[in-house]
Image 1 (cartoon, rainbow, N blue to C red):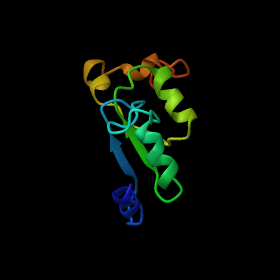
Image 2 (cartoon, rainbow, N blue to C red):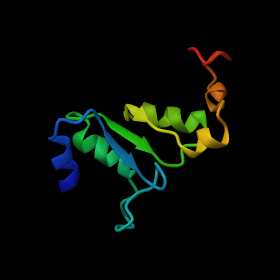
Image 3 (cartoon, one colour):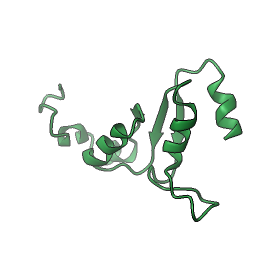
Length: 98
């Protein structure tokens, strides 16, 4: 958290948090299963936007991440496997517009 605090005080456009699983909790504390992306967003989101990435595979999973307040979501593997992934979003037209 000290590193995240230091980074948030820099003149950054956003802080990209890439984790193995967006919803996974602490890898050191078994009793803390709060998403690390969510923890970072709660800690520094008022100073710098947080972008989260990590095994968000479906539009529902992405929307859930947006709904908890994380403002930016990155997709990697999903777009490599399915370049037209965005067409799975229920409110997206087939031409990719909203």
